[in-house]
Image (cartoon, rainbow, N blue to C red; front, side, top):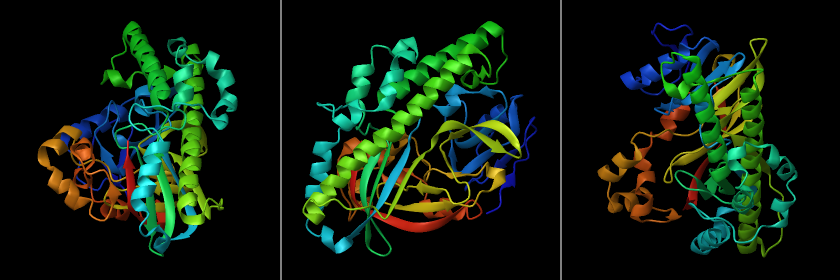
Length: 393
């Protein structure tokens, strides 16, 4: 679908691929961002766009000489990883529950952390930079080490999926855990304090920003890159464990070579070139979709997920959606649906079926097929997956 140029009076235009007419509070949030003086060209809204903090989740914001830490958000580097295995669906028969229980035993979820720190984790080269991170996190290195290789909570998950050719895929969704959250909070606080001192008349306090060239910008950019690396390695460590579990059940412990591997962020910022200029691109709930980039667009715990390849659409700053996007808030989902609804909507999926995951019920999310149909100009679908095992954070 080609984008729509929203008819709102702002300094920069807002281009929208949204699969629903924006509500007044969503329009207000888009206007707030598009009115900032350092926004480059336009703001791009992805098909799964919905309310966030400061900026809409599902927005791509390119900026010149400035960055908004709250727009990147607190789960820095949150993203997806998937591998295509040579295994076939029939090899999973009778093994789904055992696989799920092994995953839950091997990979900590929620607020939990690893009891032992494995060699892969202690050998990570970027621990040497920990002393240069914000002083507010200097007592958290031990916790950060124990959490590297843990899932976290909320909408994070680990899944065994089958594609339309009955091929087995392993997929997971996670970010930079407690350390990324703490670093984000420290810098967001600094940005808000600076805005107050400068008397900045911002449309929303969560749009407080750092200006390139200042020590505050440098400190944030350093910690942001570190957290993004941590998030990527976190997914790698979990995937290695996950892969070993599946190999144990399907190949007698023999290591297999993945047929395809994808690891992509969807809450992050990078320096990129767009329209011939160097800019900072913040993807708040969006995946990079440059030509030939592989990306992952997951549905809810009872819906399909998609492996996609980017088309390099300049108007979206070479981006696509990061999921289905929430339809109902967590509280609303809990008040709307019952445990029976959850059991019904996750039929055929080996997963937890209790009130603890009711806020993640498929009905709380937009229909993923609609979201995919809204972005045929941004990506092409290379594989359609359906989960058979789901472990929630």
